[in-house]
Image (spheres, rainbow, N blue to C red):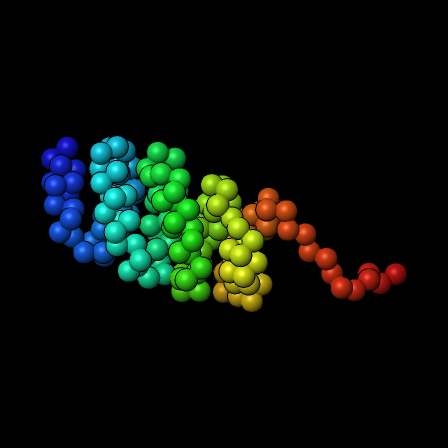
Length: 154
């Protein structure tokens, strides 16, 4: 494809927002060109530290939604950057990141207890009702059990 060749050739001159937009555009267009994705992974790896909340979340979603888009090490690097911006993501991006972290087996105790769970616990109304089923299923999949500190009334 002519567009893919053009983007691959000119990728080093694009800024971080353009790279993030291209990632999302090629993901939504379902383009699965291996050379393109390796170039996008290489270039986004250079600029990922400059992304803010939603941009980092969308980058994580793009690379973790398909198994062959990047290496396991890059997915782990993206997961390690999530706690920095998890508070500024919108509810849908937060929920999808939570789902993909569990699916890719990238969850750590720190990432769960100090970040994802705290947002789920403190901002449950903010997350919205359409995200609840995914979050509850994810909590059960992770093995989190809620123990109530009171006894049931007889």
